Image (cartoon, rainbow, N blue to C red; front, top):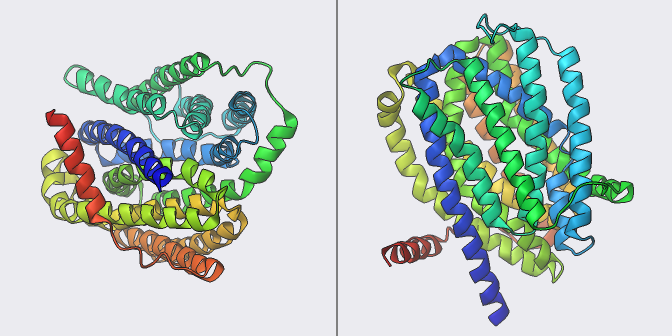
Length: 447
């Protein structure tokens, strides 16, 4: 009993720490969104979204489930953090470098006639994607080691720099400099370099040294465990991002801008789930070593907490979005309002799916989870194909994405009920936990 109390206290402390950091990240993200929306407009927003989306999908394409594997092997005490860190850094650089070279050699997009410092966009954009890919792939995987070690303060600070620095640069430069796509991409590269240097410095303080530490046997074990997780992550990314390419092909870049803007507004809700998803996985992996029943009970309590958080936030989000978008951004983005509200439901379901993904991974049921996620992905692709051939607008595309995500979540719950003879569907929202958390931190801030 005392051990469970200590566990819950430690978990709550870590969750609050990550949560406060995510609030700050959300504020910086909102400021960046306001400035870029006003400075770029829907068409340039669409171009920027396509470039970042390509980089994001390529990142997921070579991720190989590394972050989940790292957390599993560290928290199951199979390997030392130093050995895992060395292998992760070496393999991450090698994989991202190979793909980056391929991008530069093969990818030749012509999206705009903007001046990229005297270089054609067909050269500049692939070069940006290649460099951005290497820097961020390394950063994400090193950050995964810190999350696995539950070094949340280090990860929090790095995330704050990563999301906050561009926002501060945009705020300071906006009155004096014309913000355009080349400038935005250059700032993103500079920011990625700074964040990566900072995270490597922190690793060195913990005596984690990547030089000469690659172990092929360990890499193969990480790969074996991570492949189903990798597929799951990739399928979710495709579900989240495929709509952009459908819109680009059938409706044009301005509609990509509207959809991307709607997605970016709704995606602020993902910051609500990240603290629980991030802190849940190391802990549920540790509990799985005790018993599946304990891990399942813990997962159910986390779903209750996250459901309460979403229900508290969704109502004001739905009410305030139509009022604030024209004021904060511009009337040009009115077509994004209803899709943003629909996508807020999608983002909420992804948060809940993230918790269940953690549980499946802790039980070594990634393959079964892959089949379930394939069902959601199939629904998504079929729906988007219909939208493409019928020329449906961003409203219908948003609905299709939401329905496929909700179906995915329901099937995961059904599988757990059949496999473990228990149900998570009756996990009532834990409003008491949320209110206690808020009041406790308000009291602390007053003191």
